[in-house]
Every structure is written in C-alpha cells, then in structure tokens.
Image (cartoon, rainbow, N blue to C red; front, side, top):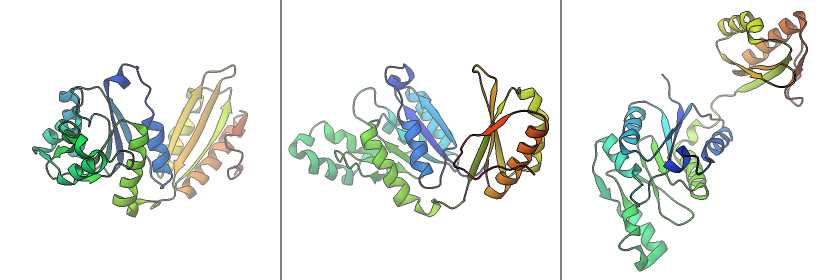
Length: 257
C-alpha cells in the first residue's frame, strides 16, 4: 500500500453529537489546494485504549497522519500519552514548547499551562499562531488541538514546511454526468468494463433518491484516461437511450465518440 494522507479526529463531544465536526471538510480543502487528497478519516472518542490502538496501526503504515484533539491537560485529554505509548517512548517536557508557553503567558504558565509542553520524547514542535501552545510531530504523525482556529493554520504550516515537495506532483481530473431514469444494475456492465480497461481512473457511482431516479456517474484520476473513459461512458449512455447532463457546465465539454 502506498503513502496516503489520513486524519484522526478525537473527542467524545464529536462521537456523542454534542459538537459537529468541522475538521473533515477543511482538511479535504486544505489538501486539495496543494494538489493532495485525503485517503481516510477516523473518528474516535476519548478512550485511551482505542486511541493508542489506532495510532499503533497508523504508525505501522507509511501514511501521513493529521490528528486533531485531545492534546490539552484536562483529565479527558489523552492523545499526548497515547501517542507516546503507541510510539514506545516516554513523555518528556519539551524545552521549546515550554519557551513558547512562557513567552505567551509569563508567570501564568505555571503550574498548569506548562503541562501542555509534555510531549512524547523526541517530538518536534508545530507552532500555534493563536496562543503559542504548540502541537507536535512524531515522524509522519502530526498532532494539533481540536480548536479549528488553531488547528487549520497549524495543518497548513505542516504541509508547507514538511511536505512541500509533495504538492502538485500529479495532475488529477474529475468528470461526471447525471444519468436519469437508470438504475445501478442497468449500468453495472458498463461500469465493470470501464474499471477493467481504465485502471488509472477511479470510478464513482452516486445514486440520488429524488423525485426522479438519478445517478451521478464519474471518474477521477489521470486526466487523459478520465477524458477518454468519460467519452465512452457518454456514448454508451446515449446509445442506451438514457438522458444525461454534465454535472459541471464549466468543465471541458464531454462529447460522444
């Protein structure tokens, strides 16, 4: 399995529905602005055993992971300790993180705020532009607060300082059409044929239950293959007698073969 980008979003308040997650959509957008995409996302409550197990699994992969939430110092914050356990290292006070907290809070850094400078040993800092209480990185795992106004600029900093060499490496295209009055089963042979003949393009099929039966059928991936495969799809749909519309009128116009 190749390297991908993953997100871990932690907090009982998300799992219980008390608060609505805002990270997922923003992570997708921030990555997309750099020509990157999210491979997976996982939500976890404030359960140390589950958090540690999830981190052990992700640390065994090559994926680049962004983790949001649970790095404070209250009793329901477990992420720092779980990250250390998953990495097999101790918790240690990070001198650079202490300096940041002291610079922001002075004497008020002690005795409690400074606890948020206790990171897994060997961690590197992620600067926090809002209150200077840093996040941290362990290898390809990057841990940020749950507060969006802090986490999102920190995520951008990580991407631009650690992974700028990955930005816009591959050009991806996405095209789709809306097919009316057709069921998935009626288009299954077409979809299987396209998948087998155009492996560089990933097919997606999104049925919509509305007043009129509709399927969004499309491809994303290498531009030339997407374009060629979509042309064949449009020809098949037209010959089968189904009405279809292009989903993005501003995109390159789809034509029949």
